[in-house]
Amino acid sequence: MKPARFRYVRAETADHAIELLDGADTNARILAGGQSLIPALSARSITASLLLDIMHCPGLNEVTQTPDEVTVGAACRQSRIELSPVVHQSIPLLSEALGWVAMPQVRSRGTVVGCLAQANAGGEVPVVSLALDAQLNLLLSGNARQRMPAGDVYAVQTGTRLPPRSLIVSASFRTLASGEGWGFSEVQLRQGHFALVCCAATLLLEESGRVRSARIAIGGLTANPYRAGRAEMSLIGEIADQDSLIRDAAQIASAERPWPARTDLHATGAFRAKAAVAAVARALRNARSRCSRQKRSDT
Amino acid sequence: MTPLDSTPQKAARDDPNESQTSLRVTVNGKQLRTLVPDRLLLSDFLREDLGLTALKVACGEGACGACTIVIDGEAARSCTLLAVQTEGAEILTLEGLNAPEGLDHVQRLFQQHHALQCGYCTPGWLMTVYSMIKRSIHPDSAEVSEYLSGHLCRCTGYRNIWAAVRRALGAANDQSVSGRE
Figure 1 (cartoon, each protein chain N blue to C red):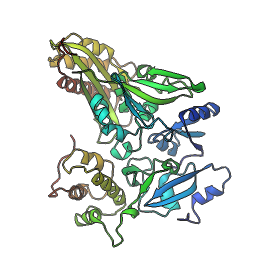
Figure 2: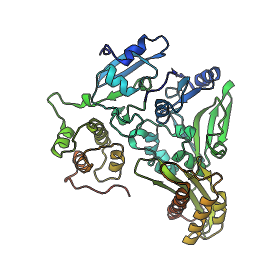
Figure 3: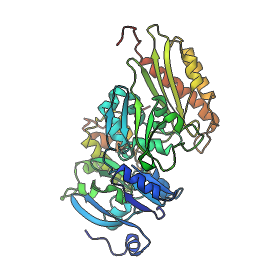
Figure 4: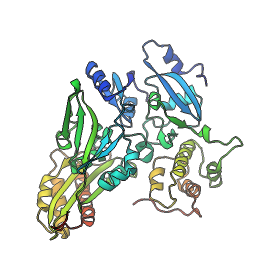
């Protein structure tokens, strides 16, 4: 349980990290909190030639806010974001989901953006990123910048579609609209364990009580998370108070998975598919209970 | 503090193929400036280079909590970090908590409640409790079970630990509360 040899460099700036990444072989890796990467290196399930530590780069440890989005820098640790008043106020869905990430002793070192980059099956942050239309702000070689929607990043059965030799400098999450309800639900074997399945959902209602917009993102059921677009469509324009509506949407959401349900030591794919129905229904009910109806005169 | 004489790290230092990096870190109030192998885990650095053997290494993947220490005021695993990652940090291990005259308040509560048997996991628990007290966690909050879920104990069955921790957090009695559903 000790890592094989690698070289470690403390990057001075994000540009410095990209420069080094550009000149390195393909087995160089970015190191942030290391709470997934170091155990994987210790178990030698992966190896690295070079680890580029970005935690000392200036500018990456910031949370910034515009009226539309909250941006979390790549060096922001999960425990800090979980307790951040700005995040709690504008994107409480992220605060809640972070409470399900591993345990406090791991969240004290792990980063929010690192979760997005690692894309571990059942990871909570990628699921939230889909529900909140997150944009990943990338730095590429030659100082090029790119914004990549989370929906594109995870549109593949395993791994990510992040460009090679790129650094995620931050992730921008959409601020919840006024009156928009949200819910997060997870099924795990025991507290602190990985998610068997989890779901992040948001609902926005018209004054009439009909659903104006909905987001349903599911993780753990498949290796990468997905947005349940058909289930979302089934809700639009309907009266959210009917529980049958939510139960049907949850069935659709689990069934429309784009990839096979995941089977591992802890649960079969069939079990996960059923657990996902329960998780989606719970997340949607929580979202509904937090909705306040939009009046046309609202500003 | 000087590194011990015959450790794997010593051997690694003599190996020209082993890449090393400078490290400036404060451990139990003492500032250190040293050179460590890049792949050296923090748990091994503390135990074998510095002789701080209260923390234990068991699972090596962050699951069991035996290697828990406090970094910059927060409980953290030392087996899922490289020593070089703690540049500029302040580390506290159980050795830094011990009052010169013996057990501190929380350690006495663990003793009184029989919250340990073999003692292997105990240093980890104590560091987590230290960080919970620092954060003023309420003894009846759901956060208590979140923090305690970060440790495995194969002897006690947890009940006595739970009682000792609640007392350490200021609860008036030892009655357990149920954790998050």
